[in-house]
Image (cartoon, rainbow, N blue to C red; front, side, top):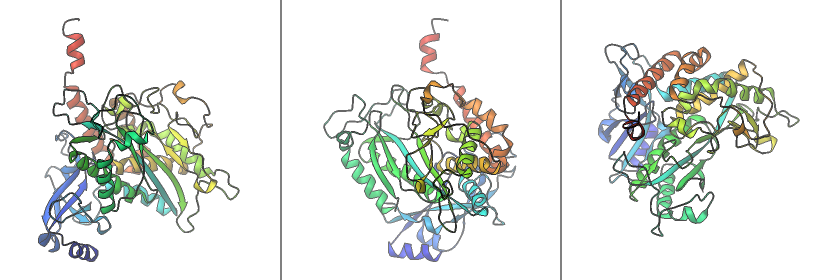
Length: 444
């Protein structure tokens, strides 16, 4: 706690937001006065917080956390403490790890799941390196969820009416917002890199510098919060829905990933002669085999699967190729020392801790099981058949039947996650949509 104490004194902090990421990647926790935080009294939350659905409901099963609704202890990670730049009073935020009273990790904590997977790599002397790319939309404030979303008005007083991929002028429309975003990120030490305008109307992408998977998951978790908050201050919404508008492409969280030797820092995907290694091809093979069973993590909502459609800048299969953006797994053109794999399948609506854990789990299984990858695809991946689940229900069935995934991510976590997603799916299935009323009410 010494580093935290020094931070609180240096910044004259009066309050602390003690937060944990839940299964959806939503920040849960407590706002604590500095005096109480410094007292050393541990924060406790019910374990059931982790199985709260995005609608605020809970799976009807006492076996997931226990019939007594027990607490868990939330332990602050000193490396994550940051100021909250938009707070009126000096307020810090710190991400917590969740443990049982005996100090063992809470198995259903997303941050704990990622730590579990990283431990498997570290035990073999391997260090994963991750670089996420986040796409998101800016939209006009929409207070009626029954109305379609619209692009916001920029500094010219007009909303975008067409697609402006890589347009500098289209980004400049929202310069005041992005100045705030970069300032907020700088205060929080979030190492964001490139900003571009993506394909959709008012769709943006921000890339992160490559680095440690847990640190990057923390950064993405905080970044989403930051962008939404900055957008509200400019009278617009920022949305990380996978497919917010039916006529526009969806938003992804592409993840570049590689492995390095923990002692030497050497890229383990590249041999001494510059050629790909068996770890490289095995990692790809693991992604190919296990990604369909991991889709409830990469595409966690009903809406997520609307993005994964042919010719909408999103992959539909598990093919891989060199510098091929039409496949699920792209190997960008690079020098051998920088050889990496880009997983293009996850939507930006995923929980970053779980998505990073899932992609690393698939790669780990591919390497340790000595799986063989297919030949790289040099043609159009959109012309191939679908290989990914077409809906959440199919994805849940595949995940529940995949024992190796449960062994790597943790059986208790997988059981809780499946129950949570099934509860969300059932809640959606009860809703009668406007499409059904429009086309079925008077015609069938």
